[in-house]
Structure formats: structure tokens, C-alpha cells
Image (cartoon, rainbow, N blue to C red; front, side, top):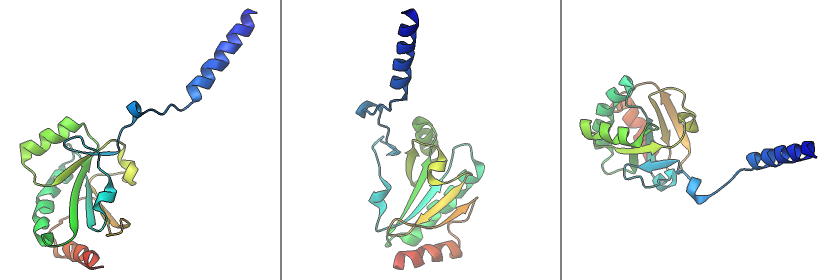
Length: 158
């Protein structure tokens, strides 16, 4: 009888552990803004989206911010959005932004960077106005370079 109880308990434990439990309390949005509000990349559709994946500890990422901010002036009257995404601690991202006074839109990714198929930093992914990936660049770049700006403006015209 004791053996039967042990087997029954083990079977019950295995079945319960293997069940995926879904609850609203466990839901964690993939992207949140600096106010902790959920954001969907769909909100950027109809715009060319320059998505810059970065981290506070990544020196090439930090070096890119100056040219990323500078490049904004090329798109003032265009349907182009620039978003910087990190998967680090939310407070750490906010503190970093406030300390450096960077004027960009920042989001926090509640997942690993491979969510975007990125395996190195910095990585920049450019999406067309339909939300399809147009191209990506792994490594640091000059966002204000004529070549990059022309690529973005060409996409924006489509």
C-alpha cells in the first residue's frame, strides 16, 4: 500500500509540474517604456523604425548615441522613429539615461536579446513602414553618415 501511495504522489507531482500555468499575474510584457507602460512594435508601423540594441556596459553602444541623436535632425519631417532597447534592469537604464541626458526613445526588453536575433552589441535593426526587417548592422556605426541617412530616407519614400 505504501508503494502505491508513493507512486501516486510521484505521478501527481510530475503531472502538475509539467502543466503550463497561465495567469495574468505571471504576464510580463516584452517591451516597456521608461514609465513601465507596455509598448508594442506595431505602434511604429507606417514609420521606418531604427531599432538600436544596446547596454549600459557596452562602450561601442554608448559611443553610438551621439551620432544617433545627431541623425534625428535628418528625419524631422519624415516618418522615421528611432528607439533604443536594452534588456538590463529598468532602474539601471533610467539612471543611465538621466545621467547622460540622452534625447532618444528608450525601451526595456523583458527577454534575452536573441528575441530580436541579436547575438552581439551594438546591433541596429531597421524595419520598413510595413514592419518588415529591411537590414541590420552588427557593430558600431555612424548614424549621421550620408550613406546611412540616404538608406533610411530611401526606405521612408516607399
